[in-house]
Image 1 (cartoon, rainbow, N blue to C red):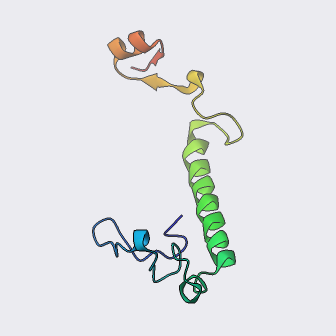
Image 2 (image 1 turned 120 degrees about the vertical axis):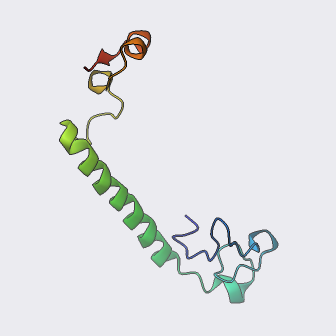
Length: 96
């Protein structure tokens, strides 16, 4: 969510000002001069775009499996494994 809002931080190179309210993008700031930089409509559109991209990728993954996204993920009849011992313990289909 923060990246959709334009957060400048990253896993290794964080700006580390989230907790003191001086976020340069206005995400965690209560300062009117800073939080005016944040466009909620643009952030909302980026979040929608992210989830739509995830949905598209899920369809690409599920289609070759013969499943549609409208069916629940994790259906036990679609699970199989090529290790006989594990298949027996988990009571799922063994695939040679």
